[in-house]
Image (cartoon, rainbow, N blue to C red; front, top):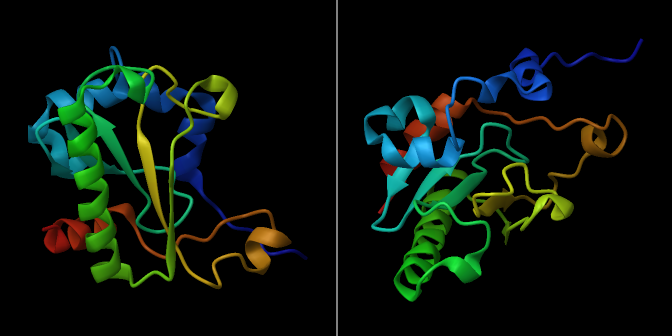
Length: 163
């Protein structure tokens, strides 16, 4: 019999239920309520952007860099916001290196629904730590990802390492 991995926390996402608690844009709500940073996994805040853990990560430590401005594309951001975005990416890379010691990173954005953006109306940048062996039999054969740490632990470790 094939092994079974249970991921019950993903079912609300698949049903679209996890967004019912939000009246408006999830990223705007997170941006406007720093008092909920710990429960919303917002690791750091800048003047124009914030860094938050992805609740449905590709890999352990997968961060999103999100502008406070509700814009669909980076062309709509001003120079100061773009500079803050890239400085936050650099801070994310440094914190992820300190905590997880990854071999490499993927950074990028899915701009628009056609490109796979889950929240296409609010631009955000992904920062994904990668390891030489992170594409293993589970991903290739099982069609599943194994993320070896909890979001809560990732949050605590990255928050402590943030400079």
